[in-house]
Image 1 (tube, rainbow, N blue to C red):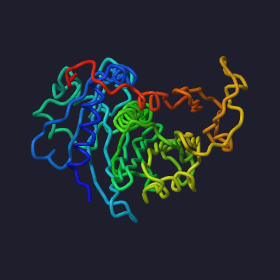
Image 2 (cartoon, rainbow, N blue to C red):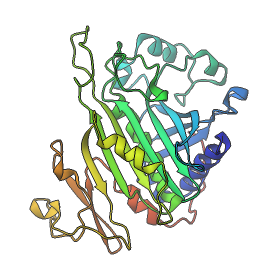
Image 3 (tube, rainbow, N blue to C red):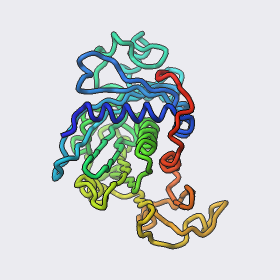
Image 4 (cartoon, rainbow, N blue to C red):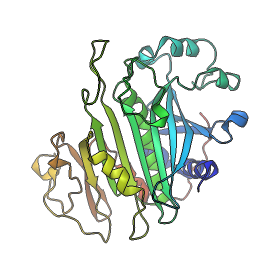
Length: 344
């Protein structure tokens, strides 16, 4: 089975190849990235820092767990935690807990907004976490699945019945807009995968568990937070999909999840359902399109807002909250045109 070295090399290649191309860095708002060097503790749990142009602080992505995908002899699932270290100058800093704010103000972070080398083992792993990413890869058919899970807002008193990913098992934070903080990094990671794989996602699903479903009453007398997962399915190279795809998709389409949107993107050579797209009904540049990949119009939570994406002769229609760069960068020129520093 694939181990930590495989995912270290895969993510390292995504960073190394993507950062060499201006179009990739610009399209994904990437400012810098660097592998975290933290001694033996990081040998089996590699980590990376990311800096985005739209975020004053810094992200940390760390491998937390690897497991075999049930029913497959070749696929493995890697669970990664997502941390966001805020800058004291941004408004979201006040949403963090007192311990986290004290650590940032206590000289343990440098001017890159990341912990100093000596401080890395002095900061509890439970702090600063905003979400979790799962990266599934099956080398037998060349298929990858990437998903991001987070609470819309994270509270101080999580309920025992609330959904959890391994990367979120010890989250303790109140009022933090976790989804909004963590999603930009996931957007960049999916874009890097699209660039290195030379194809965009074939299907994108966003599902959530409603605020009251499966939860106890809140002793804090405040709204309970929705838990959301977005899944991007790549490939496969062959006619047969990985054994990992069906259960991942089925989970997000069944109870207690509510589908926000489910977009199957038409790929070359695949049969597509044809009808007029949403743009023809009211977008400023609306016109009839031959492909309507989004099936989310069948779901009650769909808001009907889409953008039209054209790549060559293909016309795609995707929700506004999904960046078109996942498909644009799949066709980007991979030739390096810059040699940026790999750090902030």
